Image (cartoon, rainbow, N blue to C red; front, side, top):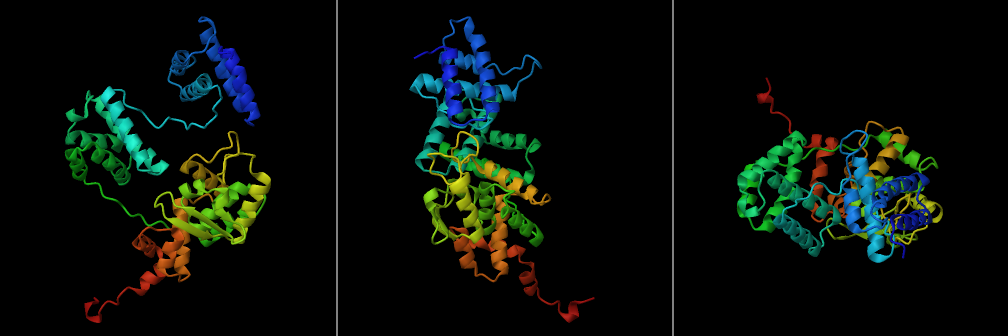
Length: 401
């Protein structure tokens, strides 16, 4: 097996073409391979993981003299592919998101702590999105401690928790910091440091329940109308219509398998990622039509059993919530709905609100949305203005001015 940079590079390029990658993407790989070849020329031309690590660390652009996000992404991506070939003899083309999940601590104790925390979350089978959120804030806190000269958790105190939260105010809205606290608390409990957990309470951050409005009738009409036309790709139309008509969460749309669709019964059955409860939702004729068009005519040839896959190679399942958000936002824009944020959270509220306006009982709405607790549905009462007005009491005549 040729283990030179040029030898491995030719195998990688061939695999990229065989997998259906766009020529522009292959060109970026070839550009990185040429740069790696130059680095290896003075060292016999052979590739090693140590050489790859040195190459991936070359993140300063010689043109600007500054850190380059694009260079870090391109070089790091190539090194991962080369390392997979050296280790397994196969070219692994799995996707990797930009940014790598944020900064990571470097001290020995903190690295072990992060590993133990990630293993614990995996053992408890937490949803991928939950593990990402919990892991990111835990690593960010440990990096914050390291920046302050703290390398051991026993040297941290409650004040460090408050200082960490205060450091986020420059980039986070105060109303959003509650979500940081929610994602932070499980990690601090895992460490067994009750004093750090108590410090979170001293921050006094409260959850705000913003009332999310329903889609205006005209906006929904435009969206559904656009999804019925060939102007919207069948995959994107089906994803948007699923969110609009069923209120499915983004994580559940991503996790749908081809076998989850019952074409005769016109339903989709799944186990929810958030609650782990089974759920079956009905599908409208338009959803079924666009899904069938996607599966039969437009879905790339892929062994991946997930219903929705990437439209460009590698043709694997959609990556994350951001992917679904981009799809829906693009559909909204093409439908002429530019003043509404295209998110599954909005569409979930929209589906619930429209069911409520149609006099569907709350237990039924809770079942359709797959709520683990019926009380979770009570939030949607706040958007039914007509019925709320029926609850307003008349002011006694004697109390009027």
